[in-house]
Amino acid sequence: MGNWFTMPRLASQHGAALDHTNDLVHWVMLVLFVGWSLFFLYVLWRFRAKRNPVANHTGVTSHTSTWLEGAVAVVEAILLIGFSIPLWAERVAGFPAPQDATRVRVVAEQFAWNIHYPGPDGVFGKTDVKLVDVQSNPLGLDRSDPAAKDDVTTINQLHLPVGRPVLVQLSSKDVIHSFALQEMRVKQDAIPGTVTPVWFVPTVTTEEMRQRTGNPEFGYEISCAQLCGLGHYRMKGYVTIHTPEDFQKWMDEREAEQSASESEEDSVWK
Image 1 (cartoon, helix red, strand yellow):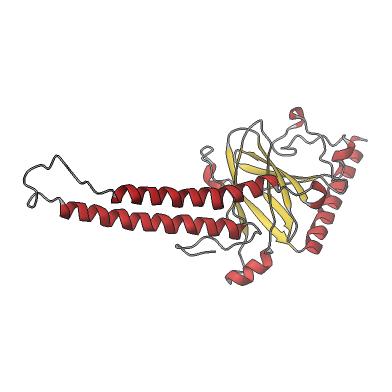
Image 2 (cartoon, one colour; image 1 turned 30 degrees about the horizontal axis):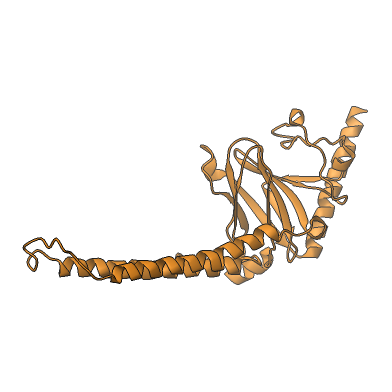
């Protein structure tokens, strides 16, 4: 993790450009803060009562402040038009093709993150609010749907492969939440009734980040960045970034577990 003066360690492809723009904004703000502070002190000294016992109704005739304000406006326009808008446009227009990405649904609720993978067929199974069960089926996944047979679901556990685009379909079951992955430089509101796509490319596996930080217990976290109720503080998820081989191994294990679970359920009903 970063220290108090830096951002958390970077672990996504697009994060460097965001950090660069963020640095530029903060440097400009520092220059403005120092400049206007010095100007304020100068004004206090220049127009002190001892030197100006009588009001001067003519006032300052110099246009220096006007030029300074114009320069500030130009710099801000450069930051906005030259950096921020192109960066935003790239994220909006550059979504990866679904077949080239790891697709996953993330459904927020008070106070958990429900994760849904489409399985080998690449198709998300149908969901039905009538099937929702907080303990056994929080997503209301209809296992009778052929497309849902191989789907994998978890709670608060998001597993992803490194070096491959991740396409998240973000939504909420109840109130507004905010999906935040600090090291990935990702933060997006999850809004009830709306599916919001988010994408990024992880570049550092969990194991590699543990080595970089010297912390064997390090783990990426999903935090909720929007106050969402009394349990907001404990709405935490965990992200594991694998090598492609380890991710496939994890998926195979989950699919096998799901298949075994369905077989048990079928035998019980029979």
